Image (cartoon, rainbow, N blue to C red; front, side, top):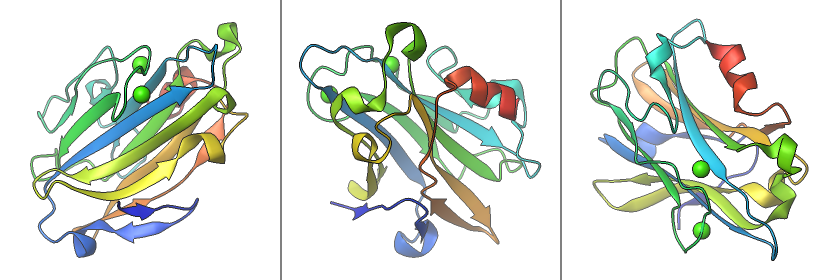
Length: 186
Ligand SMILES: [Ca+2]
Ligand SMILES: [Ca+2]
């Protein structure tokens, strides 16, 4: 088990995992009985101005790979059925476009508004980051406990500072859905 993050926590990933290159961002969820939620993990690759460096650098279920090949979403999971990571995003920090200063991780519930869904209907939900080459979990964050009334959240962000990658656990919930994040960062 990696570090269990609290909201606002910051980790120097480069210091914690020297030579960290490939990470996996895993999202897993299970629901309270009688519910059927579709969670989506998405990535925004932002430049120094906190905007997408290009539209194609928004990685989600309809755009699975960044143009530099560094970030790859392994595909949409609509049910969360089964243990372990239900959606996975792989990122190779070494080959990331050098203009990217921030890797922003957003988790949203698909069609939350029309289905009256929110994180509180989840029984168990987490997002975690794994060092792929060492097969070691670096950190994890419990979604349902932290944001029961929300339908989307900025989970956290990797930030490049003087060559080191930091992870900041933002844990900022919202009710705007994925589109509101696109509006903010496109
Ligand atoms: Ca999904
Ligand atoms: Ca699951």
